[in-house]
Length: 242
Ligand code: SF4
Image 1 (cartoon, rainbow, N blue to C red):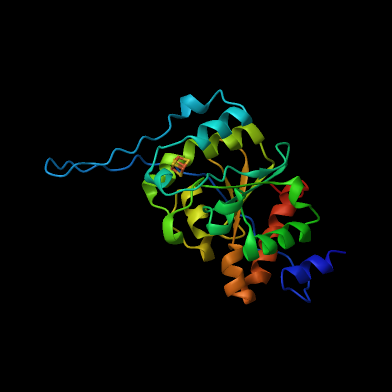
Image 2 (cartoon, protein in one colour):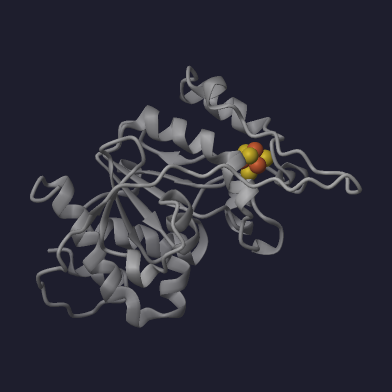
């Protein structure tokens, strides 16, 4: 029934098969950053947004807070923040890494070729893009599209956490190694993370990780694995597994 969407993912012929057993791991508490003492060097202070300061914010208030955020150095090079997009009543929450050039220009997550492939993946699951909520672990674009630093991710995490609290999704689908490792607080590689089921820390919200569309564009042979991962997530939302 979704053959045309599977085609959009670049999978022209597929055979349904049983996925690997679902593994549930609890997520370890995020470890506070190590700060080295150095009396000779002027230290840059990362003003991590206090989670208590965003705890009471609704969607509008949170978006305003993010728009004026200067908690990490990325504020200095951004042209605009990319807060997130989609339904604020969505069952599905999709989380990627950080905005790129096109996303920053449009103020929306997952644009361009990666965005088109993501849309194909969403539609392959029988959903429309407007029915899910899409955001990134970072709201500002790292210059030159470099990997975000740990400090930047920690500085931004209170915003993502509040988005999750407000949305209360039935599932979080995480795209790509950087987002997966940081959301799950692990240094495991994607080959060990994708298709398994975790819980977002201190909650019962299931988290499934899969490959980033940008990676799948470079490695189309991995699309079948990604489709298997999406099927794991679909079964959870359908109540067929937990
Ligand atoms: S990336 Fe996040 S923490 Fe850093 S300035 Fe942007 S909104 Fe603030």
